[in-house]
Each structure stands twice: as structure tokens, then as C-alpha cells.
Length: 440
View 1 (tube, rainbow, N blue to C red):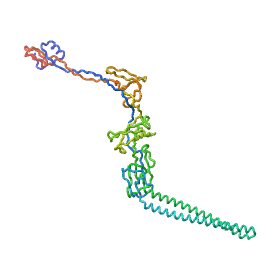
View 2 (view 1 turned 30 degrees about the vertical axis):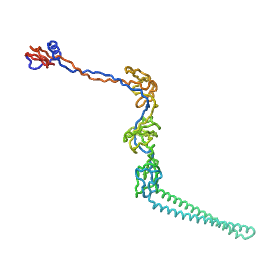
View 3 (view 1 turned 180 degrees about the horizontal axis):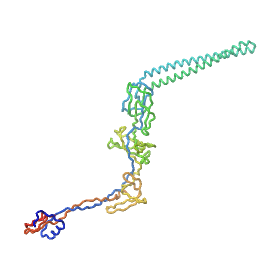
View 4 (view 1 turned 90 degrees about the vertical axis):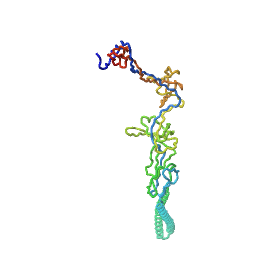
């Protein structure tokens, strides 16, 4: 029977047909195979400093900020420096209108002069009273003598009365002196206050530094206040006031980093710090931990401790308030320490640590017992067991690759003349009516 459509042979039938074939045709099919390649990872025993660091961020601040204010109220007459200017301690930075202050001082001087005049008069009255008393006492003594020698008693009685009156006059005069002296003291204090008020109308810079805030302007009024200072080291303010001008000591800069409670036990005053600045490319500054807050603050259930870091130098272009990133070195080895990548170290349950040292030809490894030192960010210190330059094993990794190969299948047959029972598609079937079957 002649097939009206191609017939697909399964693999078993195809094998039978191929086994009987006189002529053959070959078909290639792809076959995939997975191959595992093992790679040895190695490192080198190096020499240098091994250190462990804690990182934190903060913002740049001055070591000291002072807010200067006038000690008396008044109208601002001059503002002598502008925002961003640098001033020296003692420079005049502003003045007040002294018209009313000078008038008050003049009045105080006049009051003092009057008080001194009253005091002088009171002292004169005391002198006069004492003179009268002395005269009365002399008269009384004479009268007493006359009585003794037989003279009349009326004279003695009069002298006694005069003495008593003179004593009262002295007491009264001395009381007037005390009162006048009190007035002099009050007038003197008023003069001192007036003089200080006039003097305080001129405000000078309390420190040398950079003017970072000016809150007054000519013609404006200001209230009496005292200077306040804020330390970058502990961020404490001695006096709360709105100052006429704020000056920052920029001879040194600080930053405050909030260290997590899990790390704060490793932080101590004196530790070395490396500070970088996101706004300044390739700029770093050496710094030191100068203060650690004894109390914590909590924000969103995160507990941190404020740690003050003081820069050893001020990089060019650095400004107050800029962001800084600090790496605090909490522990460090000697400069000539040996160290290996931490991954090279295997520690047993008994505490023994070993490192696999790779032979020079790279074919074998030898487990070597080592003593460990500082565990750093980039490696672990080896205090004994290895020498610098040795190659150590970090382990192995296996990479799987897919290899694609080909297989050849035998396709149809035919003798080219009489034809045959057919062949796989693409085969060379004959001209016989049976044609050729499609290959599988």
C-alpha cells in the first residue's frame, strides 16, 4: 500500500531499519553535558597594621561658639562687622546710642555732688556739736569746782544742763553724718552704674573667630543680655540668650557622631579617627576622639551615644555644618605585624587555629598551626606560625560549565537504481514507487 503522507518512525523502528540498510544517511543531534571546574583561591601573608574600625557620620562644628550681647538696653548705633568676617578678641563689633546713657550719667554725677555736699555739711555739724560739747563739759567742770569751794549750786545745775544738751547735739550731728554718708554711697553706686552703662554701649568681640550670625541692625533696639558660649566638645550652653552677634572659634573643628550602644564599649577618648567629607573629593583628615557622652539618647528605639571627634587639621574648603564620615580605629596592631585574610583561618572547637599553606608549585597544601592577634577589618594578625610572602589557601570554588557535543544518526537507504523501502528525510531513496519515509 502506498503511504499518502510521511510516517514518523520511533527510535526502535528506526534502529531496525538502519540495521538492514544497504546505503545510509547521517543526521546530527546536539547533546549537552555538565562539567565541574574546581578553582583554588589563595592569598598572601602580608605585613603592616591590622586595625578594626567603627564608622559613623555627623556634621562639622566649631570647637567653641560665643554669642555676644550688649549688657544694657538701647538703640543700635553701629554694626561694625559683617557676617562671615573674622574678628580678633577686643575688636569693637557694635555700639549703642549713648544720648540717654550720658544724660543718666550726668544726673548721677550731680546727685553724687549734692550728696557729698550734704555729707560735708553733716561732718561740719558734727565738728560744731563736738565743740559745743567740749565747752559745756568745761563749764560743767568749773561749776563743780565752784560748788566744792562754797560757791552757789544754781551755777552747777545750769552747767550740767548745758552739757546734756551738747551731748544730744553731738549725737544728732553724728546721725546726720551717717545719713549723708548713705546718700553719698548711693550716689556713688549710681555713678558707677551710669559709667558702666555708657561703657557697655560699646560691644567688643569676646574671642577671636569667624562671625557666623548677626541679629542686630542700625536703628534697631536691643535688650540687655549676657554673652553665652556653646562648646563643640559637649554641646552645652552656659547661658540662654539671643545674642547681638555669634562668633565661632574656627581654629579647630569637631564633629559629633552617634555611636550605637553595641559599639560604644569599644570607643574611648584618645582613639585615632580618619574623617572623610562627601562634599570634598579625595580629602581626608586625621582626628581624635575627645569626648564620649556618659548618657545615651534614643530615637525610634535606637540607642546611641554622642561621641565628639576633634580634627587635627582643617582641610581647605571645609565649612561649618558639612557632612563628615568618621572611621574610629578601636584596636590596632604594631606596624610590622603579619596578617592574612580571615577566610584563610580555620579554628577548631578546642581553640586551635590553622592556616593551609600552599606549596611553591601550587600542587599541595600544608595545615600550619598559628597564633592569632588583632582581628581587623581587612585581615587577622598572625603572631606566630607564618612568614611574610607565603601563599595560603582561602578555599575552593567549583564552577559548572555546559559542553555541547553532537551525535550522528544514520538516515534512510537505497541502492540508487531499484529504490528501496524508503529513507529518513533527506536520504537518498530510489525511484521505486514506494518512495522514501521521512527520517526521525
